Image (cartoon, rainbow, N blue to C red; front, side, top):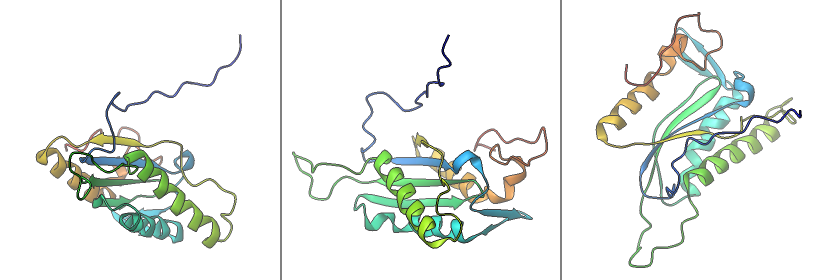
Length: 180
């Protein structure tokens, strides 16, 4: 019997066009969830040089994607959370303009822009991998859910001791979702 690599299971909706004008909640993690972006001390986020580049790369995305609007965003020690909105193409009538700015393309570009800068600007990081493969996304369904997700993103540093992404959290301390 051959050892087969585990198959990746997609959590994305089949047959859904992720370039549709919607609000999306995104999360992407660092390679092996290593705390490469900074640290949390007393509930406050302290970004290192890599984390600052990641932050700048996120806020540069609208310069590359005209339909993209950024909403809440946070850089954590080993992951980032963000809300993005894709708007309908300007001037789109009966024949909408071709849309290449899908959620996947935007996340790919973000990771690429940040990685390129980190590899050229941060000494000693030239060959290391910055990002884990893939990302998590959720289509935001309504304004109430959007408000909960915004609060979750903005409160993430103060809840770090309970975050499932925090490898150093005490056993038993876990916040499962963004409802609490």
